[in-house]
Structure formats: C-alpha cells, structure tokens
Image (cartoon, rainbow, N blue to C red; front, side):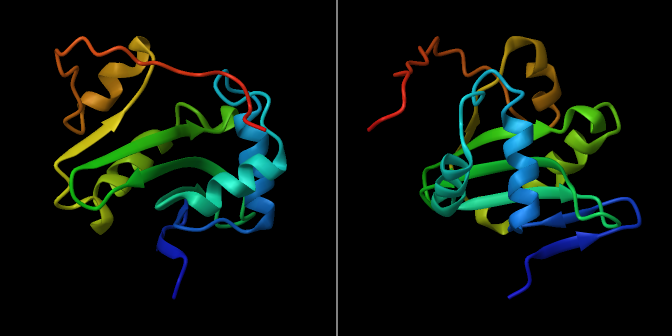
Length: 148
C-alpha cells in the first residue's frame, strides 16, 4: 500500500510519516501553544492511534511542511486535530492545499458531523470548507496534564 496520495513539483501529499518527518512534526508542535510540552514518544504514540494522518511534504527534501490528523468513528463523527503549517512555510497556500485534499479523503465521506476546534482568529479560514459555529454555545472542556 502506498503512503503517497499525490505529488506535484511543489509538494507531495502523504498519509503516513517517515522517521525524519516525525521529527519535523515534533519540531512543529513544540512551537504551538497546545502541544508545546510533547516529547517524541508522545508524538509517536499519537500517530499510532490516529485514524487519518495527512501531510504536505517537500518533494525535494522530504521535509514535512504541513500536517493534520483526524479521529473518525466511521458513521457519526470525525474530529480534525492539529491542522498546522510549519512556521517557515506559512502564507504560501499550504493550509488550503492541506484542507482541500483532506476534505476529499474517502475516510471522511458519509460522516454526519466533521468537527474541529480553532481560535476565533482562524475560524474564517475553515468556513471555506463548510465549517461554521454550530450556534449551540457548547463549552470546550479540557483536563490538562499528562496522564501517568
């Protein structure tokens, strides 16, 4: 089974990460508020449990440029997590490429509710793919800390 989804001269879309790309991901998440304290073991365990992994890779160097993942129950719900573009690759359209190709993945077809959580400042970006505030005034609750 191939791990590559698509390749152009500018980028390659992949559904698995090699060891070097996992290190790239670790570097990317260490710069974000929600994953700042995660170590390599955390990243590897997280990847092993994901239903869908999607990355944008530089075809020349193999470097991971953008990443997201999803947990999917197969019927009712999918939740997208960690939609992230490497700091040096931002404002080059990679977020759009990532989301366009992600939303076309067959694993998401037929799912009743696809959700994601984001800061208000980037909500407009996700509206392009049909995401909207559900108006339910739900409270996102989080238990902080690393379970032992």
